[in-house]
Amino acid sequence: MGELDRRPEAAPAAPREWAYAPAPESRDVVRIAERYGHFVGGEWLEATESYETISPSSEEPLAHVGQATQQDVDGAVGAARNAFANGWSSLPGSERAKYLFRIARLLQERAREFAVLESLNGGKPIKESRDVDLPLAAAHFFYYAGWADKLEYAFPNRRPRPVGVAGQIIPWNFPLLMLSWKIAPALACGNTVVLKPAETTPLTALLFCDVLRQAELPPGVVNIVTGDGRTGAAIVDHPDVDKVAFTGSTEVGKAIQRQLAGSGKKLTLELGGKAANIVFDDCALDQAVEGIVNGIYFNQGHVCCAGSRLFVQESIYEPLVEKLKRRLTTLRVGDPLDKNTDVGAINSAMQLDKIRELVAAGEEEGAEIYQPPCRLPEKGYWFAPTVFTNVAQSYRIAQEEIFGPVLSVLTFRTPEEAVEKANNTPYGLSAGVWTEKGSRILWMAQRLRAGVVWANTYNRFDPASPFGGYKESGFGREGGLHGLEPYLRFDE
Ligand code: NDP
Image (tube, rainbow, N blue to C red; front, side):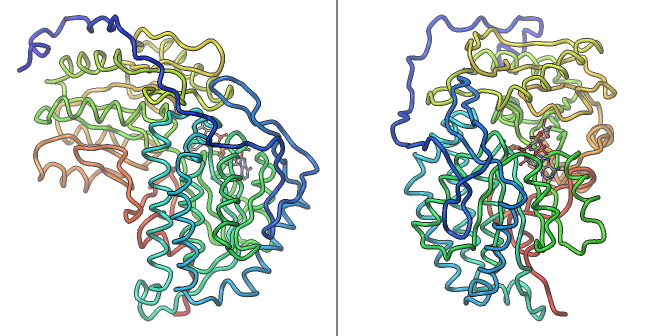
């Protein structure tokens, strides 16, 4: 046992005296227009209504962005239908693949520009947008480019054919990555697209239109309209949309499912989560602590599959919590564009209010709160990394999706108890298991009601691996071979 393990009562070490020198990424690589319209039929259409999008880390206005009306949505769906009927759907898969490969390469070439813009508009640390969001976004286009001419082999004897116009609505936590998850498989299968980014994070989707032009994608194959939930609802409702793909809150997901009932439209929903990260006493403790930190503080906890409920086997509870608290004192919270930042800004004032409300509920219900000493910037939306111990399963912080940098720690004694507690949630998107025993990993994975189960790692993504939920976390899979199916119909 290490020195720390032998001192269970010791307080977390004091924060270091020295500080990192600022290492800001330059903003000059990206040019933001003063005003954006909607990208329809390969052209920029002026928006009749608009709103201001800001940087959540400084509250600085960045640009005026269009609020799409019913008429704008009609135009976008019309352009997508036209492109579908007049060329794109009948193009050989190998030709469609060329466009996807081009888009992937352009994303790689322009990665720095996209990463800076993503961090500016969304608040996530540049090291995440640079090292996670952008490489994965490009990888998705590369991956689905590879499938475009192999659909007959992916689904033998089923005559796969495109569905038509896909209406796609994405959230604000991984703006460009979610766009890639949606657009790449849709185009690979021969569909055309109308996509709406989230109200707070439209800028990388708008920059992506520039990539579409550079790639010379035929006009109308991808159309991007911006706006709030009303624009999303207009896309979902549009009679000429054949398939809806939605990622966001369970509440809106349920409303969409109700709205589409009986319409015959295909639907996939990727909704919220309250994942269990389960740590057994035989795990590599330091590695598990890193996985726990990555599981909940990555992207400020704005992650649908965040490991927000930590289940620790009782025998290692004290050393683990102590190591975790000490690790928290080393997290650097601040400017998203600083290359040393670990935890950036909360995405919006509204999300910050939600986090504060749930944290207050946790304290009221009797949980014990720990936050490392850290000075938060005065402007912008910030929340310190937080750990709750003494949490009961019935507390709101153990039940509801907080979608912020807040971890609830619970305990268990046996694997059976861990499974029962982990599954005690309306959600079922992901889970983590930390143990050195392969047989235990498999035993747990068979019993956990979660779409993804990570073993001795967390938040690891790959375009070849399907992702999606059970229960109120939604249905349908994105990624991998499974991710093609929602964008195809079969004559069987
Ligand atoms: P929403 O579900 O409201 O937003 C997701 C997307 O749907 C956005 O583009 C949104 O537009 C759009 N939208 C909103 N209302 C409708 C509607 N009636 N019909 C069609 N589209 C609609 O999530 P929020 O941004 O409001 O976040 C609320 C909570 O949801 C978070 O606190 C978090 O717990 C959870 N969440 C989960 C996500 C996940 O990945 N599973 C992602 C984001 C949030 P607009 O941006 O304009 O609201």
